[in-house]
Image (cartoon, rainbow, N blue to C red; front, top):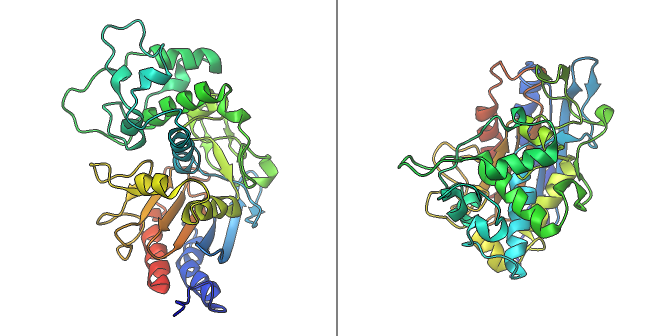
Length: 349
């Protein structure tokens, strides 16, 4: 007996995309967000994309297109850094439970002791370390190479019993591990089509009017720390088209990005309700209340998100420029993400 999938059934995936994009179109029409694109992809390659609104409002209006490049912010963690770290494990170059000091022997070398040296790759990937959520690294130095040295020698403190938090610092350090193993900076990596570090301004969705840089950003990374690290870091820096994101999701769903064993470990509960890189399903999360117990997802500050439900064989991505021209307004993005996700999941069941 052959079980039909959404992709097998003519028109069903397209109809589902229409339904799921309806609340997005309403948000664009109401002016809550400037523009958006929604993409759905199934494990057997079915794909549907819907888009609307403006890639930029200021300094001059531009429409969203299928080839628009989006600053995908923290999706860098799950589309680049976590898979690359798992590839090191698959090739025997690293183990998830290696301390950072195995790969960064100069980390905290002038401190005695330096608890950060004992933090493991798994701790960083699953946000289980004691490291802070963020730090104003971009204010420490203007030279990207010196800045890397300052990050390595910064006193990151120690565990004082506070619960771990979602931390960009975890992924900045993972990015430095990858750079050491690769022998070059992240921005020299060969990336799949549809992914890049930076984009031409006229082809990119604009983000915020940045007071530090004194301009509306388009094609240059929104995150200040990633910008200071020459635009490429373990926690942020990637730009993508909607098809670039969906291609990445398909590589995960189809197990071509990594082995089945690595994928199972990546999506497993790491003891704190998180997976390696990803956020697991929980009440009130952005991936909707209809997700299966294997679903994972991630969002990015600029207004982007990606969710995978391996049990249903589907992934979906909503890319918006909700911070354009400013982050200081209510866009309803959290409710919008949940609404879109539940529509997708109801149609995929």
